[in-house]
Image 1 (cartoon, rainbow, N blue to C red):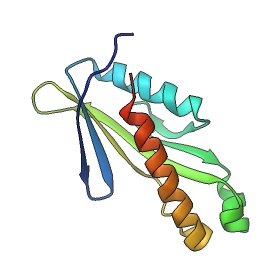
Image 2 (tube, helix red, strand yellow; image 1 turned 90 degrees about the vertical axis):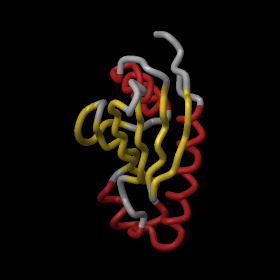
Image 3 (cartoon, one colour; image 1 turned 120 degrees about the vertical axis):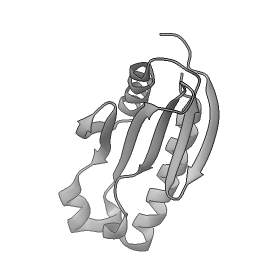
Image 4 (cartoon, helix red, strand yellow; image 1 turned 45 degrees about the horizontal axis):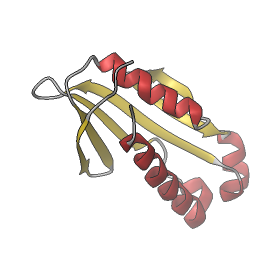
Amino acid sequence: MANLQLMNVAQAGEKIIFVYAPCPPQQVADAAAALMHREGYRLEQGNLMNGVWGIGNKTMRILFGAFVKRFSFHIMIGPGLNGEVQLEFSKGMSGFSGGVIGIAKLNTEMNRMQQLLRGLY
């Protein structure tokens, strides 16, 4: 697999948008999926181009709140304006079931994953 070239990173509300130099969108999807798997996430809904990735147990998170590790993120990959490829990364959950601590943990994980996605290749 050839290296991906990150051209720009922007924030639009709660979404982080990564813009890559022209390449097949599936190449970006495969690299993102490999990263998510390495970090322990699994595809819970959708597909590699538009899916929700999660780690942890939903039911246990509801029962025990912030004491249980549970994160979920949405990744959508598609064409940009000039042949570039865009990867949109956003939270797939609110974190409210873990209270204030759960929200803080989700935000910390969001920032960590964002940094890892910046190094996607």
